[in-house]
Length: 250
Image 1 (cartoon, rainbow, N blue to C red):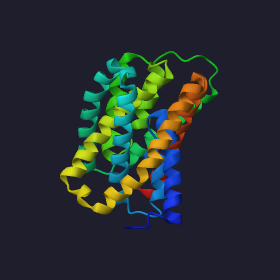
Image 2 (cartoon, helix red, strand yellow):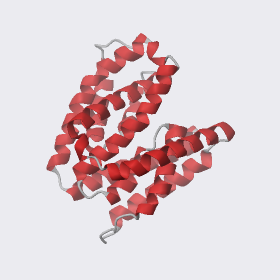
Image 3 (cartoon, rainbow, N blue to C red):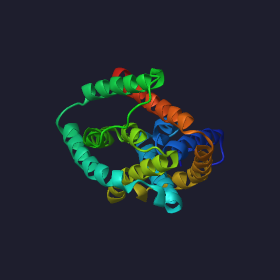
Image 4 (cartoon, one colour):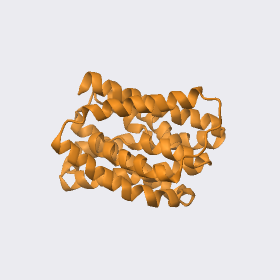
C-alpha cells in the first residue's frame, strides 16, 4: 500500500476527491483534471489512471441508474460512433508521432472559446447539428491521446441542450462510455489484479458518493446561467492544463 488508509496523506487525497466529484456531479466531467495533480504527489501515475477510471465508471453508472431517463439519447447516438472513430485516430497518432502541436492548438482554441463565452453579451445560438462531427472526433482523439476529452463534448452539448440536468446526465453518460473502454483495457491487462489499486479505489468511493450527491443537488438549485458559468470555468481550466502540458510536460 503506497500510504496508510488512516493518515494525513489519505485525508488530503480524500478531500481532493470530494471536491473533484462535486464538480463531476455538477458538470459530468472534470474529476481527473482536478484530482490527478494532487494524487500524483502520493501515488504513481500508473495507479492513478486506473483508480480514477474505475471510480468515474462507478459514479457514471450510479447516476445513470438514478437519472438515466433524462439523458438526451438523440445526441448520444451520434456522438458515440464518432467518438470511437476519433479514439482510433488518436491511437494511430500516438503510435506514429508526438502530438505536441495538437495540444497547443486545442489549448489556445479552448481558452479563446471560453473567454468569448464569458465576455460576449449576446445570446449564443445553439451549435449546428453538423458540428457533432468535429467535436466528437476531436473528443475521441484527445481521449485516446491523454485520457481527457470530456471538456470537448461539454463545449458541444452545453450549446445544444437547454436543460442543465439533461446536459449533466448526457455528459455523464458519454464519460461513462469512454471510461468503460479504459476499464476493460486495464482489466484485460491485469491492472486490477493489484490488490492495492482496488483497495485504494474502494477507500476513495465514499468521497465520490458524497461529492456526486452534493454536485447533483447544487445543480438542481442554481440557475442555468450560473450552471453554464461553472461549465465554462471547468473547460477554461482544461484549456490552461493543456497549455501547461505543452510548455512544461511534453
